[in-house]
Image (cartoon, rainbow over all chains, first blue to last red; front, side, top):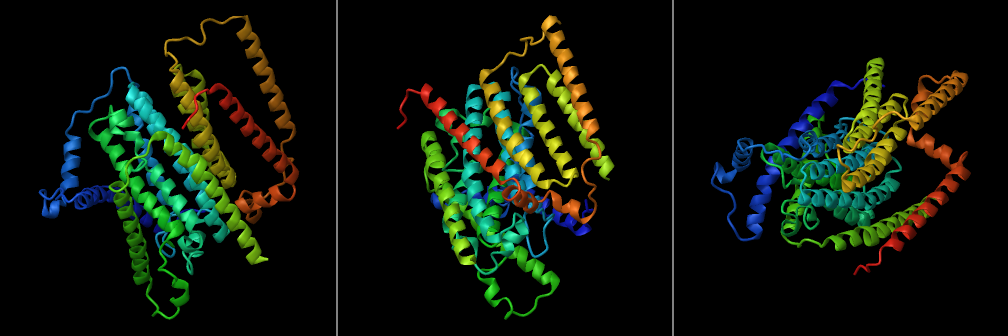
Length: 336
Length: 172
């Protein structure tokens, strides 16, 4: 076991700080973009352009009464909101933000990612059960079933990307896209992964977990104050993480499009300039994907639960497997 | 560092295993078991088997235990329902049998101490990687691998058959 180097600690601190703050920023952006799409004004009263609105929301949440259902399970009820936040923060460990700017380069990075994502199910299942409420239990079970089902197409879509990189390390996957992004060579995989990422983040059109007409508030019906705040935070962190993963797997990570063809023509940048450029490109793409997440939410209506399940199991999964097999054959023919 | 990590992980593994058996609430037991799986994954990491560690989390903690939890939550077992009321003859026999099995296991593992080749440095780091395991699976252990695949497929088909038999409602 080699000791972690100092720079990885610094990157970790930076990444965690950015990720935690990003939730607040994304909440603000979502409300403004939603207002824009629906021809409204949106929050614009607190601070310049309403920029301090997330801060006001958090202060309001902190001062609310923290209610635990009497017949629920107090310990699990308290622990449940921590799970989604922890799994979201763990994911950052393997994402490369720039050339050499990663916390750790695991040789099983992709599998680590899937494993951490699969642990996120516990948060919602525990929250639903510990609340001792039928709405919560149904919401929690729905959420868990949805997340389990969409993990499979997501895994197959990632597997088709791994074929191009011939490595399970995230850094190798990003570097294999220096000439052609994953989106161009593997468009079907990109679409499947994006749809699955929406479902994993429990975002519209797959937000059946909190379908108000049927389940009141879903698994967080019985949550209030900062415990609810943590679920809220986790949801937006998962949006950001999902965008980062789409960027890493299919939008070339920190590489500009077709960078391999013209990188040698450009003037040589210094270490710092290159680091800043890489991070800017990465954050730019992530920001665009976050916008797509919000855009889709206010454009496409919610699915029914049976439609969701049949989409996941009988359409996305066979399509993802077929995509994987076809790509594997083509790559074999090219290489032989 | 490694010793510290080992002691930490071992304490966690034994503690969660005990808590799983002792705890009266079934949901708590299941959650302790998840923690136990995670600490076992920690052992694999210590032994340089990163692939096994991640698969342990992915398959056992991430998928199988979720299904366990589902069943327990839906059955809604009562907390007051005592599983163990008083010690009777049957339990005495099972306890003795468990002791015998434990003794046998310890005896067998004691005989095999030192049989594995000593690996240090470069080879030990490469032993648990995905490449090494993939190579072995598709060359030396190809037949067992394929047989396992067929077995799993048969199990999936069987599960689907069982599930379809009970449902008379036709989904649209």
